[in-house]
Image 1: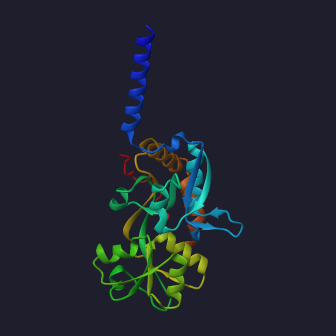
Image 2: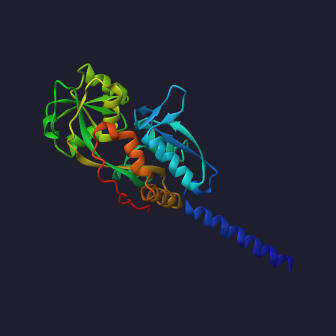
Image 3: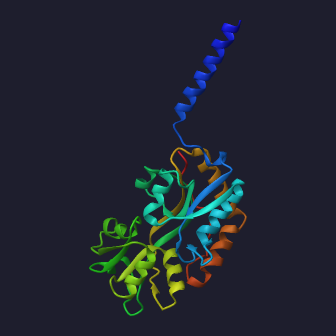
Length: 270
């Protein structure tokens, strides 16, 4: 009898091991008590670090809302554009809420929930050198923040022969625009609106509205339960009016078109 029980126990243990190996995925965020959420620290009105060291902005408020809906405590950590994949792959963050545009190449590395916001690519210029549309970037120098893909999308997708000039972050980009190292900054309209509002020197947003930008919440690959839970939280955020409230709070003064705010069509979690 003892021998039979031992055999059964060994079989159960073996099945458990095989099952665990078969998942091959990371621990889901739904199973964690505390989440580490990476947010931008360099984008005014979107994700920025205040003098006291705390974070604020539209994306930061989205991160807080989602964590609350998941019933999780959380810690916010800063991340720049170039490091968004790295912090997820290395396990330094459980989620990334950082103007993280969903793309096929990024999907090969991380899993995206959402998108939680649909914006458009736009162009920021000096007041004395207006650029009205993406075609007028031909022959111009445009800023590229390392780790972002907006400038390359102008060249590769729109086939505009602009000269791409790399900078470490958007603050350096903005300085480059003002001191005439570049002629334009192009990226998500919410990023540009925040930069222009913070700067206050009269920089001009073109309202060109090209290349839909689907900002998603980055998760480690394989965390399908976590992705589905985050999508439910994003749906709630739109249905209970929080998304509209946050967008108007942060961007009403920017001139962005906020007349239509609806739940975005999700990418799916597979």
